[in-house]
Length: 329
Image (tube, rainbow, N blue to C red):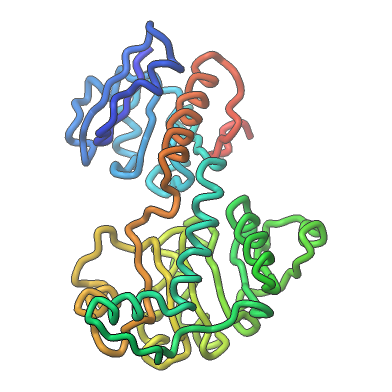
């Protein structure tokens, strides 16, 4: 069997080789776009372990003659044309259950950093300024955290926030009734209700046509003044220009972003340009990390292992556990 890992992979493929066995031919493309791999290699591969660097559009999928499955080595699959793959009889799967603890921990870590004023205090101490004056610190107990998307990570974040004495509400129109009862949290019916009630909003939704730019001017129009926004999900869920405007108007007190619409950032994302330039109005109000909420050595190994196991199940004729393109319907 031919297993293609098209993306740049700096580590050896020991994890994948152990799962697929000695008969597998594992090809690492080291490519940043599909043009970096020949049509022959695309045509002959039986399975693809896809990271997030290459876009699997209709044209690329048409080249996959032998491919039976594309497994996104990660949670998000917005770089794969699901319908085109289904029409080509190719399963698309993901790995939804790795790094859950890491992302939830990172969410809380960013929030604690912001609301204890750590970015500003750290900057000052580097300048031998030991002033305690800081407008960011706040007590977490009895704050209301609104979670958008109550999947595995949203649930893990809710449990951590509850441990800090916070009240949890959530918005997720796809979650079955009663799940909130088992966690001791409250559901709201609309996104605007969540915006209006929450002191802290934490995003844990996938990127879809429905969620792209979901956090926009209309959301910020309804938001509680002085609230905090956290995004460890997908960058394009937030309209960064709208967030910048809301922060300039002090409707949003601070924000924590692990993901951006464009990564790495460029000059089109003015909020990040302001952050890079250490603009006075933004000091201490924004925490940005480079899309690493998921990462720990354990989570990275787990992600690769589970992706390979899913691909092998499909190649062996078994049913995939995490199919995301309605292949079986």
